[in-house]
Length: 291
Image 1 (cartoon, rainbow, N blue to C red):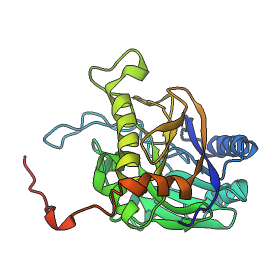
Image 2: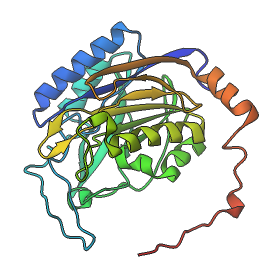
Image 3: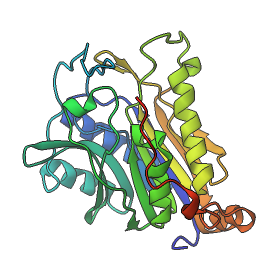
Image 4: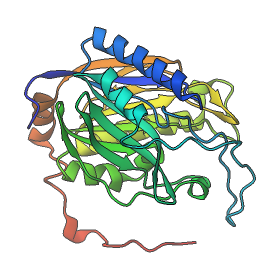
């Protein structure tokens, strides 16, 4: 294991809209709060630079009953916005979400960076509810070496697919940061956000992905509302046994937990090592798709 001592992890739950200057001010504030608590890795929500889509919606036939009022601004990997985040981060490792462009294609992306700059980028692979109308899909899952150990990144709906986190764990990820703009259910929504069925799914995925891969899971999420979306919050840190170490609940804020990554992964994997005990030869190479 590359991490040999306790590390403090932080996950942010906050509302980020289209105003990038306001976004940067919020990021700076949360980094300072995290720094004061000794946090080494801080995960901020999906689209924390420029905001997410203001609406999602699709029918089974591919038609879309809702359209966003505006699209997030494109943030260049070498541009001033990420340079500013790097300056804010300094010694800290920070994960942020933004809209990236590659030629004519736009991607819903996450970057991990320190004061030295961008260490790695993940482009969201799985696209819910018409997101494909506005973004191209990413094509792979790769972990990256960082000051806090080997890190994998996922974005929101990616975590609903076990293969996503498993791919990162097989690539050596000890910690997975999953950043989201996960909304409440649009149908049969609950008055109490904590009881909403999409809130419950969000939390179940976090715990299951941590447990089945025996990794530290750091989940950030948006809070409040944006356009026609209401976000479920629940930023959290989950241990490799699937236990929630810290959570914001549905409120905005910062969840912080300390984990000795090397020791806890070793303990979790001593008796039941889910990665070692896999039987890939028995799994379907490609599962059939049923309409």
